Image (cartoon, rainbow, N blue to C red; front, side, top):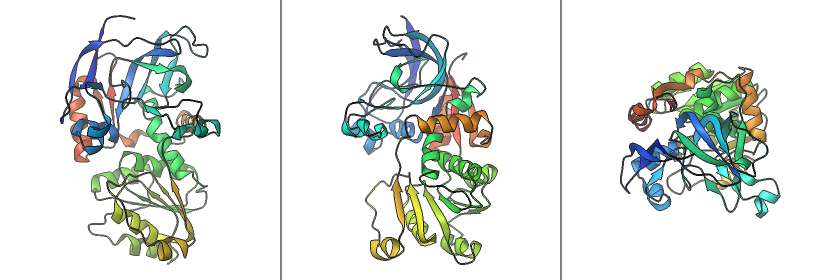
Length: 349
């Protein structure tokens, strides 16, 4: 396909972005071209937009942002066999090589030669995006396109929740941002019996309540550890899901965990974190998990089924459903922390 399309472009190495016309991307033999129906804004997109230190060291401008999307295939490369024009798809955003040690032992989410859609190659904040067949996911037609566009971050939440089973467990989620509140809904669906959520934003704690949190705590006025211990008869929670990247939240989570509990960490601290390994981890016999990406494609299968069955309804988490040209409104809300997931209707602008 030839011609131009509208895309959200990081034009210069400075804060900001602009919606402008660019050429429709060509595709390699093993790629497809997808017409994007919906795309959703991620924290990574906010970093690129704000041009923080990470973005300055990683992104080469000009660059098309965005990696969470759902759409329909309009063109296939000559070697594509598993997908056809018209298929309703999303994409795993960790584009793996398939040949390195991690890929060969079943951990392609941490491929040594990883490329990330919208970071290392042109992204999905555009009318069309080119994607390799090997990372395509065929969506369930019963799942609305806006929901399908958030499967990627929902997969982050799922893998954080399910590092081990939460069935019958008490759980504290530290950080009620978009992925944190999705983690609340998933933990509830998988059988958590008591859910605590903490965040500095009362707005986001309200969203956590809608997704199933039983107790919400704001560290600016609540002693999180004391409240968790009181709510668990002095035992502490079985599981902590650290979604914030805050050092204070990390320490609160360690202290709120019952001995022999587990913590799974998805939040990214912006500097090294100090921890009392002896007293807070080793002598408590805690299990700590780092989580990145998603299991390809078992996580996608579970997320798809959760959405198709409506066992998890993400509607409360999607606080902004905007036209593509209104992206600035959504980005401003993400920067201000006054949103859950922001989705952009790209097609049919």
